[in-house]
Length: 89
Image (cartoon, rainbow, N blue to C red; front, top):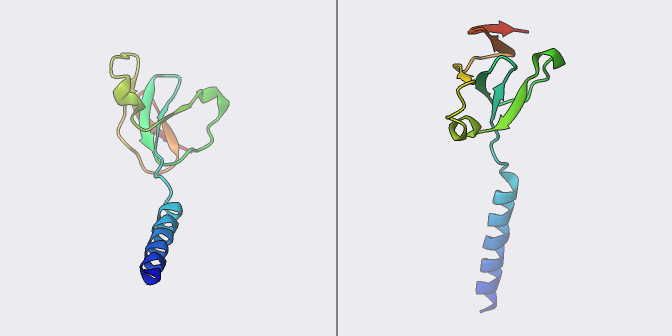
């Protein structure tokens, strides 16, 4: 009986260590003052004049009725969309 408790405790602690070690994946949806939105995995620092806002992943799908936003394709690297053109910085 004591061996079974030890095994169960070891399994529980092992599972807890695995769960604690895996962080939740975070993704963001970013929109600028021109209403252009895109998906990113990072929270880059943008100039205040761009008025960039970060939202949790899935925000755009919940706001599908908002016509003032335009979804742009994902783009590699740091930058932002303006008038349908990716501007790198």
